[in-house]
Image (cartoon, rainbow, N blue to C red; front, side, top):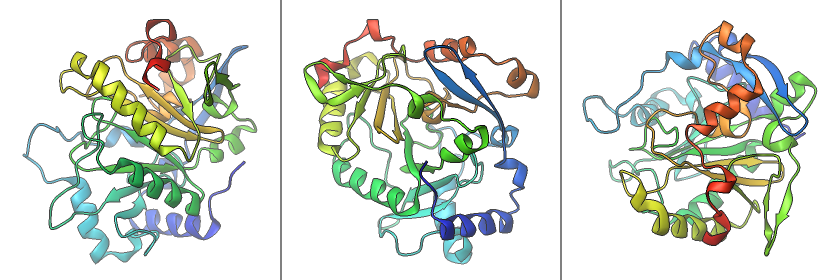
Amino acid sequence: MNLIKEDFLKKWVVAVSEAGIPQQAYDSKIKLLENSDYSIGALFNPHRFERKYQNPNTDSSKCKLCSELEDSLIHPFKDLAPGISKNFLVTYNAFPHFIGSSMAIAKNINGKEKAMYNTKNLFGLVSELDEIFKIGEKLGLKVFHNTFGAGASIPSHEHWHLLHPDSNYKKLGVKYGFDASEKKKLKGNEKVKIMPSFPFAHLIFDSNDFEKIVFFFKNLGDNLGKNYPYGHVPHSICQGHDGILIVPNKIHKDRPIGSTDIAGHYLSCKNLEEFENMNLDDYISKLDEILFRKEDIDLKMFL
């Protein structure tokens, strides 16, 4: 298992305490859901449902991420990795998925927000992916991302999630989800893999092949973007131990489950009863609402 950098974790714990975030907000209940083919970890974290959703189509409230950038100048404890990047602030997530949950927030340039990338706007994404994944590697964290229509709550301001899923594996004593699943090389393209046991359309890319990922996004958007209300294809990025999982959504939905859920860290149980009764079929049913089945689309055509 990969370990979060100890000095970073110490800073993270001090910072969230300073911010008044209680320990129970990142020490979630967790249980393993599995069958013979696939497994997930279902988590119960009611603190995450205290977030207020910012409507991306209105200017009625100030961008919360812009506020975080400003606050980090006044409260240095919020800057968890000073000097790690000129383009991003690394800070804790005020509504953490689990311990160590952080964000890399794009810094404003000349007072302007950097909008979230999408399959219609891929300029500079290769170098951005390279920078973000290097930040994650330096801190011992994995990179996750939701685009607009695939779980992003603030699409007007680019940000990346930096997470430590191994903390959940340690708690359960076993890996699950994307990290535990068998991977096989894709026929005709051995640098890309798939999970035979995961029923939804996906591809797994090499952790350093960012040009291939962006090339795939462009082809995906050029061919399917017209089917979505904003002309781009919502999708998730999930970094695991064996590569980068890319999963497109079949529909645009402002508040669907996000990349962590798709990778097998299911955080969408809204109450204790739902958590206790949750089973793997429920999880698959939730994903069926937003994702393509493998038989519905051949993603290999976009490579």
